[in-house]
Image 1: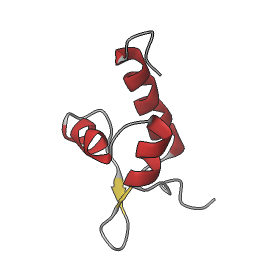
Image 2: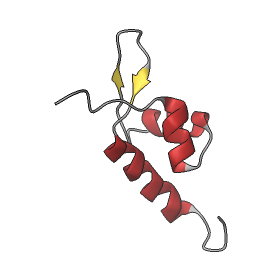
Image 3: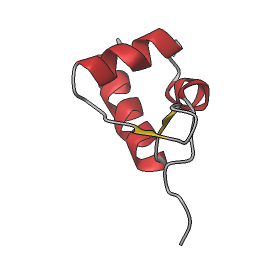
Image 4: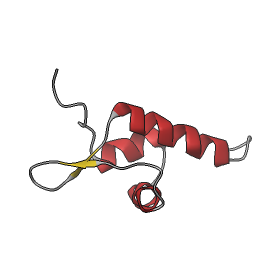
Length: 65
């Protein structure tokens, strides 16, 4: 089936539309828990990225991109 945890911090930050540090803050706050690869890098699923995007979109003012 393959590894579902295949997105890096930078890739998720781009999908979500935030800075990578914002993504790491959300991890510390418990909104998402990435897996670690063999090099100890954080890896996320597409579902986790979409969840974070939904959270951030709900916090942005309606007139902001």
